[in-house]
Length: 223
Image 1 (tube, helix red, strand yellow):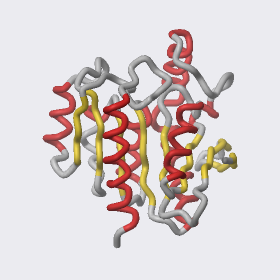
Image 2 (cartoon, helix red, strand yellow):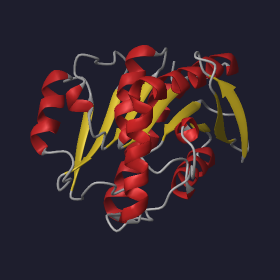
Image 3 (cartoon, rainbow, N blue to C red):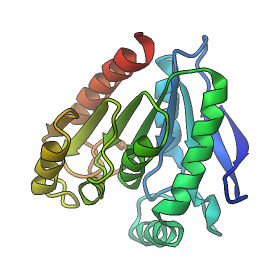
Image 4 (cartoon, helix red, strand yellow):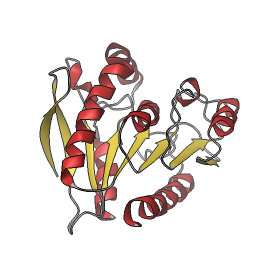
């Protein structure tokens, strides 16, 4: 576990959390945060990926804002996170993600992007811009609003059937616009993958993780 810094195309310097596997990486996964920053949960996601053999890196997108960078899940912290997200916007966040993608190209690995909530939307948008090999989205809140940017690489999506932020009609809209994407529904709500939230649903998280691991192996390891 370590941190390093990169510079985006507009000159902004930001931090990147890096988790290396024990052996030579099988590939690289860019992990994109929710509105809670690169907090303990996102670090744990990176550790789990590294344990499976992937180089996992998570750009600290909140570095563009002052104040606390890693948030918890209380109501006041949710409001702080939403304000930071609105202040940064997708355009600036994508500059940082693009910088990570350029860095990743120099590492010589196949690359995937994986995002959660806001990060899921950013993963969808980044996959349309970057040279990547796979895209994984956990409950991307605004994917349905960006169907003009459909990635050409393989896409795996996880949604909760009881997600109050993403109506099932939006999931159906995504499926119609991108029939080549693998889309799975789970008997859970928003944030079901996060063990630190009340919405955590262990069976759904475990099944989604199993599918994600296979998807990464299929598209980053095989020629």
